[in-house]
Length: 204
Image 1: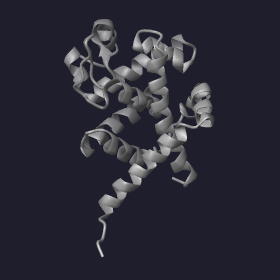
Image 2: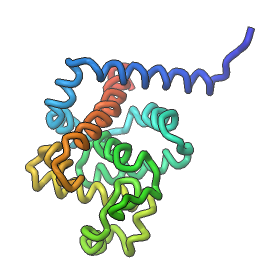
Image 3: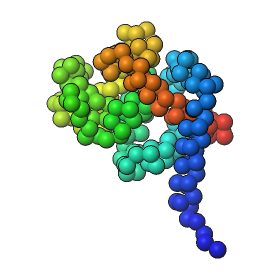
Image 4: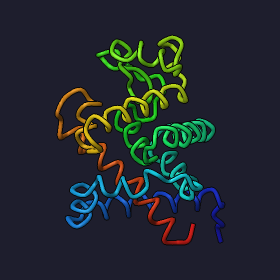
């Protein structure tokens, strides 16, 4: 009898979890709950400073979904945890923006010269980021920690401007009123939040 390694079974379990997440999110009930009421869902946890209980499962989800390495994913999650707490953001929102903007590629550059994981527009934000001691030069944005802090700083600013409305803040972040963009971010947000909730239900 062939014995499956623990690593293989672990990857298989995560793949099954991803499939369940996708199928679950396609239901009308979940679309209504996680998209129409997305701000209340975010506000439920944006003050959270407790241990990130779902982190291991989220790292596995990223690893099987995107071509990245374990140590790199851990570094990203360290940075997300620190910056989300500093700027009072839900970690799942930050991860959702990273996935949507760059697919977890730290060296991503857009046609508009937006750079890094959270696609920071240096032409717009360089002076403000330097003033707040987040970067010294635009090259610093290729470091995931600096880029994620910059993205969290910007998102926090836009959330305040939009009085806490996440979708309005996403329009500002993207630079235009795009339902397609906000829909992608909110769907990715629901993926990560569903992993959070599944771990909570199992007792962490």
